[in-house]
Length: 411
Ligand code: 5CA
Ligand code: ZN
Image (cartoon, rainbow, N blue to C red; front, side, top):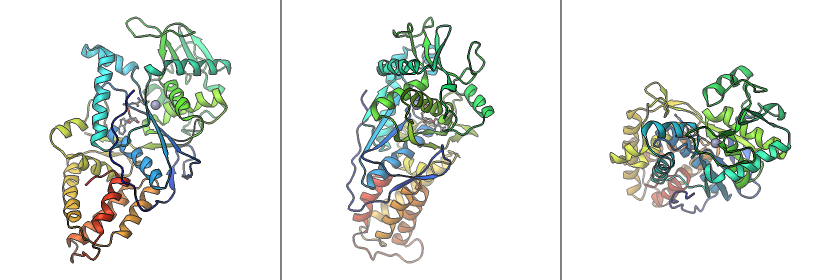
């Protein structure tokens, strides 16, 4: 399907350092040195409701990775899916009495607009689950050939025992796996399964649900096989980074890794990175709980999207944090102050600020450190820290493209 429009991306006269990222699988920081284009897969939305601040936080986080790689001189091949057929989408469509295809199209279009407003670089391939059904079938056939598929009634399951590396992405113990599996769309208690953790790869047709033909009868894809098939097709095996929010660590990314490992004998991704969860009113912001702040609602009330983006950048991507209005108002004030300082043209020396921004982002996407460097420059330039320093005549000319290219802040 169509992605969203790309924001302008200034070319910088400087090169940033190589990117180091926290890897969920190994639990430590790892340097990502792509050989050729850096291949990135970020799990996309399930489009049954509008983009909330939690989603935005996750996509802005990995937009920083996209930008940091480019600043370090790499081409980036970025792929994202849309889970445009799945239980929560069908349930919501049913509940509100709209056609599920229409609901998915409407919310995906709103997501595109939100991503454009937040200046998130678009993926080169933006791929729906429905349009990928032939890829899913092909991957299930490979898994079947590897002896890892079995049937329970009309459904097909993937046997996690077929993957000797199962568990190495999340590193969770079995009890934690069972808990998250039950909470996040799994069915540990279903009779007839070989292992409670085995996941559905093909869900046989149910009355009133959409279905597609397959060698195993009509049905629809399971969730994990969708991302595994899309990533494998559009990025190949052992791509640089699989990313998403931390609620995808298990089972989603573990199962994706398992499917590809068993089907191809190759690892899925080299690194797995996960963004923290944004809460609101004391709980994880989630479509199912309904405690949501929508990006589109903020935009509709004339909030500058650059202030929304800055409010997100003030938190390290791996931390869990709670959204409050105060974060937004502070960001609105900060954007105004940054613009005032940049409008002067001359300012405090820009070169060390540029170096600090690029170093911070290359060090596990440390946006709070990068934005603190800009705060210090703004304070020195405006004299809010004592004496105004306008010794660098080119300061704004140097800084503006760096804020845009590295942080996605067009001021
Ligand atoms: N379609 C699947 C992935 S294949 C899915 O998880 N969709 S989603 O719409 O539920 O979430 C989209 C992305 O936003 C995921 O990476 C998810 O981890 C992230 N996300 C969801 N809620 C939050 C939150 N409260 N804070 C941060 N990220 C979140
Ligand atoms: Zn996914």
